[in-house]
Length: 106
Image (tube, rainbow, N blue to C red):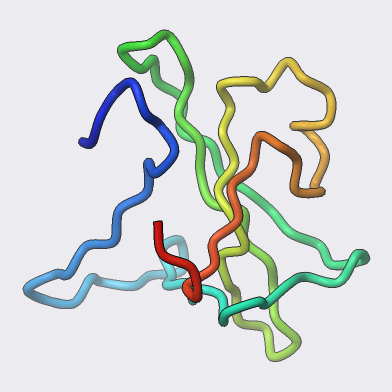
């Protein structure tokens, strides 16, 4: 999907014909409000999907934070292409994480 030489925008939103079946192990997550941030003490988590890309990198996944009302929102996207860089392993947004902001358009 997209231009393999430009990996700046490797996220897609899909419109489905019918609702997904949500289960204990598969739930929905909200997109962030424009300018929404997580407090410095906020616990966030991310998921990584293993797999080789055509360029030899690894796929990444969402950086998800919990809201005060026990919901979740996606704060950014983590890439594992540079996982050997120590700051990429912290829960702080690093140069290897892209921030999602619906108020901005590419």
